[in-house]
Image (cartoon, rainbow over all chains, first blue to last red; front, side, top):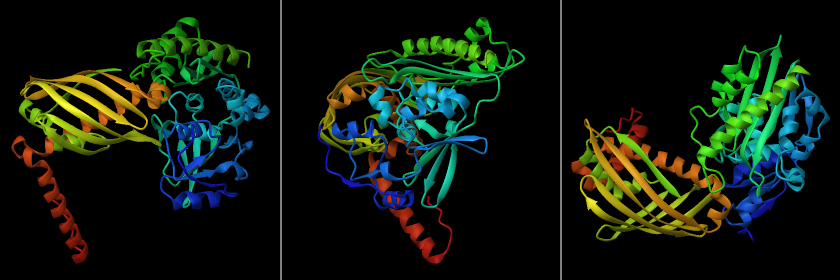
Length: 288
Length: 182
């Protein structure tokens, strides 16, 4: 449980962090450290240089800015779970954060760290996909914004370049008559999602004017269940329509299996949890 | 862990077979394979550097081929070890002719142990699938590139090609012309 030797820096500005990152290949960024540090201690991962983002100012803020909600990459799961702004304007993120690990993990782990690590069992990817969020990355040469759907490539792999730092996640606040839900089957020991389904539903005159479904945990990366969304689009969210949509959530996706849950069982769980999440989100939209 | 699947190659069976028994060409297609050497008849040792993102490790191991029935079948025994874990297993490869194309069927069973297996269990399935896909993509390109007869000289030929390409590119840079390799 002792990691291999590495250098440690704690830069106090983003520019300094970027400069350090550019200096050494294979340098790793430390956010909450709840995935990276265990991997280093087990020697599953190693790095010559650890760059701690903990002292870089301005990365923990959650604010509304010109009609967009911006969440700093170093915002902890707990600060997201308990954010008054998010629970009022974009509750899917608070619902999702509440399901992550345990309180200790939520107190240290960060949204930026979780997204950049792209663990296939992480919770946020489902929510960020369902919210059609954007990921902001800074590099020495500038800033770029990546749509959530283009961000996740494969397990532990994103479109972030080696010299980039994820600084912010941007989501749109909920329009009127919108409800959301996150339903999850956690792995009993690790708390990671065996499956997790995030749903946001917007109603207009009793019919679904917008449905977004993000699924995590079941495959190598999180995905948007577009075939399922289309089933509900323009229809009233009644039980039969919801059940029909839920059946489509696993369409075209290759599931992963392990000793806890086979691929077939995961597919089944996705469909069941999609149905429950859709029902709950629709109920919340009606009373919104 | 059990693995199985199929892959169709748009090439005659003999050509796919000649690839599958050529350690040099195999090595070029195995993701992260640094070394594959013959140590006996149908027996090889190798080194691979595999993993995803930061979770990477070096593994050394032995591969042995049995039940060889050209050009349609062999059995492969694998025994490997690294700092993060070990793998021990066996699998079969079968080739079937299909109107000029070749259907490859593989199936195997492997035991994976050590820290990687206990902590990374939930990722092994997906990682295996990613690497299998990488291997087949590389293999398809490799089979399409070199016809069966030159397979034996594959590695020399490739060295020669990259040498020629390198010289051409350098010349082109010096003289400002356009480089066209091959």
